[in-house]
Structure formats: C-alpha cells, structure tokens
Image (cartoon, rainbow, N blue to C red; front, side):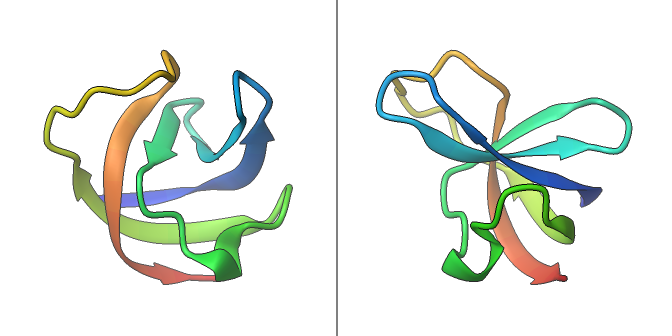
Length: 70
C-alpha cells in the first residue's frame, strides 16, 4: 500500500514514531527508518501490514515500511 502523510512522535509509554495519513488514518511503523524520524516531515511510504505481534502501544495500525520517498 502507498501512504502519504506526516511523521509525528507519539509520547505514550516510552514513545514511538508514527505516520498520520492525509486521510487521518494512524499508522505505526515497526521499522521506521532513521531518515524519517523528523517531526512534521511529509512522507510517502510503501508499506505492508505487519504480522500480528504483541506491542505495548495501543495506537495506530502496525505496518512494515518497504520503501519511502521524502
């Protein structure tokens, strides 16, 4: 899938990086590249749904980023 949106830092628990899609959908990449870890950065990422894995974060849909554009 292709996701267009804005990077944000979520301060829940230990904190994590996330993407809020232009459509308002909340995405939680489990492999956020260092180049994207900039608050309010506009991004386009290609991703797939992450396999079900336990997480302490109850926010967003987990994804695995396969490639990205900035």
